[in-house]
Image 1 (cartoon, rainbow, N blue to C red):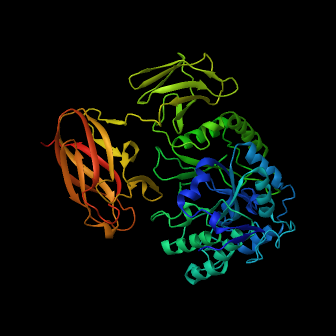
Image 2: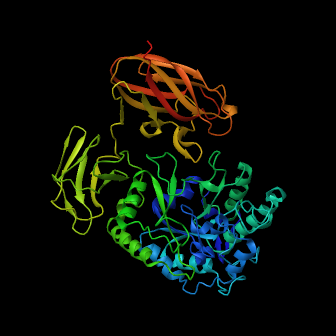
Image 3: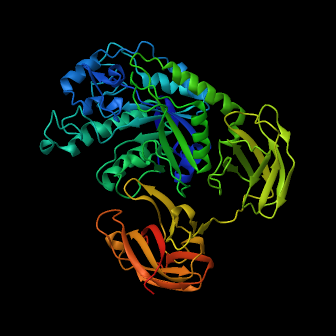
Length: 572
């Protein structure tokens, strides 16, 4: 039984803490939109050190690493860190007015400098600088006043200041480093400080990953023990191995081409770099930010949008202006984003769709010139359609087969994204996508067009890319609808990776009535994909259902599935 935990003066009973991943994720799924803040001594350097700029394509917060600044020199710069324009209330208010529901700030980035009052290391903003204030304490309180979930980023593996941590090979000799000692001496104790000194924490955003699953689980256990309801992002563990944490954390500025079956978040920047750079003026437009938010929500994820305050604590004016305009859109149309789920529709000629129960939100980026909005593949019966926004109104509509047609006003109500709400008789049911063969070209079936069932899931891994896994028995499957244009004999080629312990698992590939059977072969390392010939099938032109599944219960995952290809065997 977990005892109650004292967090910054707040007694949190264990009985009120979330114990399951679903419980922990509930607020996160509702929130959808968060603010990421990269801020530290590197913000003073602003992308330049002694006349040298950060190399093209590199990030300002990596200046110590990329320009190989000696620890002593970087520490000297950090001594002068005095962000007198820092205003926690303004930052939290900026996040709330932009429509953001949570905020993640760098408590320690890779430079090793603590942006809070750490008792573990004197290399922190209170003890090392003339500022003498704890920004995290002030920001945690400001977030609570604004109704924002306070969260923090912590670089648990990488620390260029510490002689035993990963990353600094210009001051220290890697062969002489004791990484385990660093974890026990600095990384874990600082994590405990952060989890017990700043009240309830929404999530811990780890970065760069640890070497082994056991190391990652140690950090997760600290979080689970001190704050059971706190989320842990997917970067807590090794990027090349199986997911650890509560949700998938995509690559920087990453975006899945389609939806995933596990919950996910994408960290993205408002310009190019993460920490402040005086040279980076490539600001995203409010239109880009809003449409990315909608696209991410339509695919079932969260948008963590980064800002980089200046070294003096001021927020760049373009940031304030862009987020202000984004916030105006969210204030009008937020119901079409918050708490929505992935839509069973992909990209559409006019925009995107989000879903909440039996309601569709049609986000119209491109207003139809003929005034008729078309949504194909919908099997439900619509009950009502209306415009959201300042001038809401009911729309006339009709259903022709599986196509819903709605008559729109002549002009779009919103220049960025106008939203139509459609109430259905039940949660949406749609026609599955059909993969069409073009001429005699090979037909490739992958996660994008698959319909998963049972425990089979569409997933992501930095090394493995987008794949299907978590299937252990015949009820777990990936299914496609395909249309063959050129009749003939087809070679069936399966591409997958498998852990050595999974070798021997049996699978079935059904192409229409024909079933091919095979045995999984292990692949070296993690996500080392191989292509195997599964057999041949004779196909007439027409529509086919293609299914891949375990042939029997395995007691473990079947494989990491990447794709299935039907290639015409022109030699027969």
